[in-house]
Length: 279
Image (cartoon, rainbow, N blue to C red; front, side):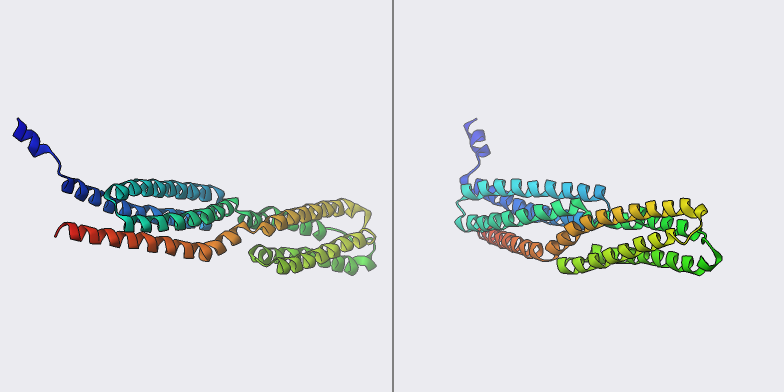
């Protein structure tokens, strides 16, 4: 019986080898989970709906938590093995990962806000509908006298062109990241809005009484369009999609590379330990 018990006893060397094997598995999983976290975060940045942004941000958070768990488990193993060099490399990774995660939180918060995407939806949805309704209302206004016919057409065409000018400026504003450039675009929008309103005022004195309903509808559509444009500008000014993409392609990529360098150095150090242990 004593012999049987002795045969089942694990030697210190066997225990160390098993811990080394487990440590190698953990650092490999660390690389996988870190890669998953980065990929999910990138998909959140590139997503074209709020729902998919939130879903991918959740996946990134889950993978990030797995990285933290693997790191803690690996630290316990390395401490028991008294691998000071590997512990130093893990300390380096943990420090770099903390910096990475702080930036990643900012990127994901910006990505799920989706303000540029929401501004784009306003531009191609409700704002376009209001602009089209404005044009439709002015298409049917009648001149007060025959001599006013061409003047009414010119005033209506100028008003519609001013609104179309604002529409054309929306896309550049949404894509722009420079505040000064956005300010200049907004100044052009304001000037065009003033032209549209001035033309409506002049039309009121040159159209037939029967066209008052159409003019009122045009005025209401213009008010709605300009209100939506103001909402669009506010969303575009926050620039969350543009900023999250810029951070992902800039600072985050550098921090990602630094973390991967630490993990690969740790993996190489453990591989050398394994080679020595099997000699």
